[in-house]
Length: 120
Image 1 (cartoon, rainbow, N blue to C red):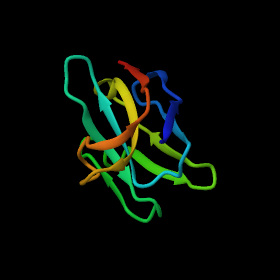
Image 2 (cartoon, one colour):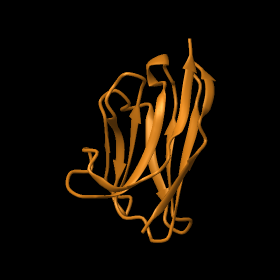
Image 3 (tube, rainbow, N blue to C red):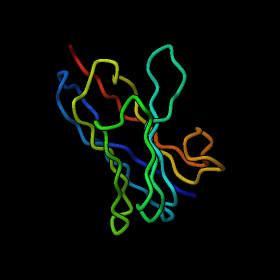
C-alpha cells in the first residue's frame, strides 16, 4: 500500500506561482502523475514523470508553465506551477503506479487532493 499526501495548494492571483508537493509513504513511488478536477468537469491529466525522472509528459494546456520533478530520496513528487491562470483553478491530485499510460487516470494510488484557486 502507498499513502500519498498532497500539499502546497492555495489562493493565488493570476500570473502567480505555486509549488505542489506529494509525499509518499508505505512504499517507494514508481511512475507518478498529477491530475486536476475543476467543478463540473472530468478529472484531467496535467503532468507525469517516470521513476528515474528522465522522462516527463505534460498536457498541452500547461506546457511551458508547469514543471513536474521529483526527489526520490524524499519520496516526493512536485509540481511547479508558474504563470497561473483562472482556468487552472481545480483540485489537484497526485497518483502513482499507473496501470497503463501515465496520461490516463488509471492509477492504483491517489492522494486526497489539494485545492488551487487562481483569481483574476
